[in-house]
Amino acid sequence: MKYVCFEMPDGNKWMAALDDIDVIRDNEIIFHGSFQVIASRLLGLTYPEYLRFLQSRGATLKGKQGYCYGYFKDKAACQKVCKLLNDKLMDLEMDMEG
Image (tube, rainbow, N blue to C red; front, side):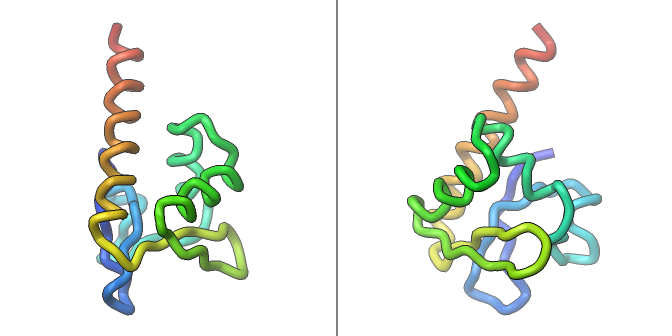
């Protein structure tokens, strides 16, 4: 499992999403439920703090129902966030193993 930059269906918008089959089904991101909270927990942030973090990295926030989420118009900015999240996942895996 890792974070990837997923191109949203309306094109030219990118979102950091887990590549796990339970998160991305039939090439669509699941925008509801607690999957959106995993990234905030990896960074030790509350979900509102995580959304502010995404905004500080250039993301636009969206969502009126369920969990709000952030997306990027710049793929490179999304890739930087994905790299950070993947590094945190690796740290967590190493802590669990050792």
